[in-house]
Image (cartoon, rainbow, N blue to C red; front, side, top):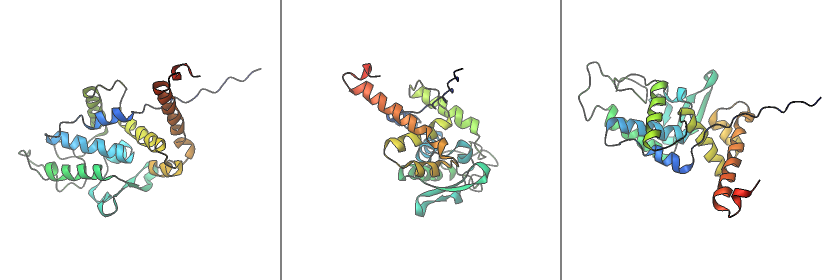
Length: 210
């Protein structure tokens, strides 16, 4: 008897570089909401954090002097993740322009400065994961991205783009907070898929390659 082949895991959805740029630039940053949303998208893509980790980020978890953030992942495991200057700049802009209360009259009881969370909803409370999911879906439509986008898509995109750029898989594993490197290795398969796309697009006989 022949053994049935094992079903391969479905590869996660990943945005290419053009798509992530369009998504990042989709919010209207002339509005307070747009500034907040841009800061959220920049942070998700810059760090690869889970949305559950993002909504629980506190000001004290942002260590600006070292350009890192501290997150508590599954099992309350702490990890330190580098964060790029661009994401930091948008967090700073959000903190000054929105959280500080400039630009509009706040509803009664609004106490954004007393709330230690970095990202807040419009009432000054904790933003929900479903709100971020809806926000990303809206901006993906605005950016004419045909893929099914959710917060984890940016985590997948973060890891894949790092590996495409030559990052060591152990470093990516640590940043993602994977206890098993096998979980991280799926992004190597995504990297190969990206290379196949490059071949198909740019090689004169790429479409016929097998």
